[in-house]
Length: 346
Image (cartoon, rainbow, N blue to C red; front, side, top):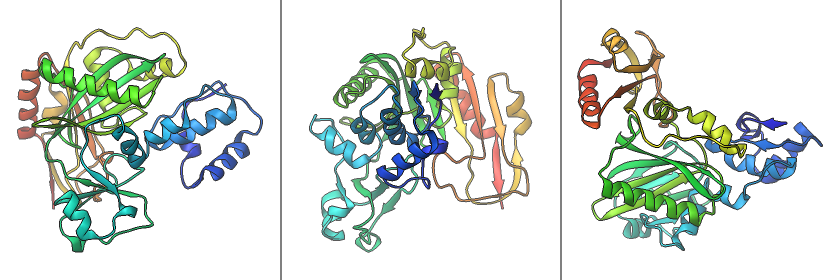
């Protein structure tokens, strides 16, 4: 027997400590045994690792799961392997706001140690903005003004079986799959990705690593032991002509899977979120829906609806996924889309 997704059962508010998590697992499953526990989201990674040990399932080290969830644990650990990254400190260890700004510069990025998709992220510009929360589990980082990308890897038996690179054309809004970087940059990104995976001793699963493309090279952002958000999995399916969810299941079950050798299309996903307010008009709906390059298109709102503030990259009011036969054609189509489709707010 297997549990295909631990998240609905094993995330807060059902548990807030490891012991509470263990009590929840014992209460729900008793002496039952399972072959596999598969975490389908960031919040489920650590609970799934604990559940595997308790339920007799295929195991991954809980330390690896924690280091792929807790940004401070992750960066402290990877710093010992000379992985390049922006400077950071635990908020709980900062002696004063002035000292934090003296070390990290302006602005300071405050993140929750265990969150994803930019949820809870703050940019702090002055010492007065930084009321230190010594009891909170936050990390403070030096701000990086650079383009970003991600690397999605399928791993089995200590070997990376398949890699996709994603270009964040507009972070939180537009993703290009595959990234189509030049060969030199692509090699550097893949090398950094491999170093991180080897350092963390990730022997199986799917990883999503984010990296900053700075002028002097690359800076590691963070890594998650889970599928990516932002409809990247959808884009991978259209770009490579395979089902990445089936591949994930095969990897988790330690089964064979034939991965594609290269992409067959260049895809883009744009997530729509115009900001908080009332929807006044939606322009270009029919044009976009009927466009021959459109592969997936969904709008979740209508005129008159009220949209709340976007709290994370995972929140959207719709998305478009389109495919082209080259990187240049994809970029041209994305620019055309931006001119012809819009959501107007009151």
